[in-house]
Image (cartoon, rainbow, N blue to C red):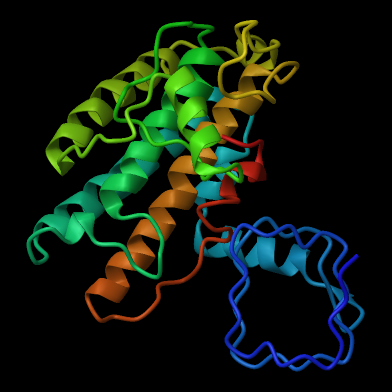
Length: 264
C-alpha cells in the first residue's frame, strides 16, 4: 500500500485510479471535487453517500424510474432520457461551429460521448438483452482501457470498432435514432417476468466480460444509467463551453460511471 505523509497534493488530479480502502487522515480539502463510483464514504465519522444519493434523486427524479422494476416506469424513464438528449442536441446546434467536437478538461466531446452510448447499446442491449452476436457498430467508442495502447487496439479490433472513425454529429445521431427505435419497440411489450429472466449473453469472449448471470433488468439498467450519467457529463461540459460554469453534478466520471450497475 502506498502511503503519502506530509505531502502537498494541491491541484493534483487522479484519473482512472482505484482508491478503494484509501484513508485520508488529518487532511485539508478546500474546493475539492470527487467524481466516480463512490460507496461507503465516511467523512469525519459520517457515512455521506446516502445523503448524496438522496440529493441526486431529488435533483433528477428520473433516477427513481430507472431503478424501478415496473415496465411502465422504464418506458417513461426512456422517454425522459430521449427528451433530455433531444434538448441538448438542439442546444449544441445553436452553439459555435464544432462545439460538439470540443473536449473540456480532457473529457470526451459530445460526439465522442454519443459514440460511447452507441457502444453501450451494442454491448449491453443488443448482446446482453437481445442475445445477438452481430458485429458492433464500427463508430462506437469503448470505455477507457488501462492496458497499453497496443493491447487496447487489439481489444477494440475484436469488437469490430474503428479507432480511426471521425463521424459527424448527424452521422452518430442517425445511428442513435435507429438504436432508440429498437429499445422503444422492445420496451413496449416487455413484461416483468421477462425482465427478471437471466440475460441471454452470448458465450464468447467479446464485450462485456462481466454480464454472465445478470438479469435482463440489470443489463437494461446499465443502458439507462449510462444514458442518464453521460447526458449529465455532456450538459456540464457544454455549460463550461458556454461560459456558464459547471452544472449540477450527476456523480461519476466517464471512466467509472459504467460500474454503477456493471462495467460497460
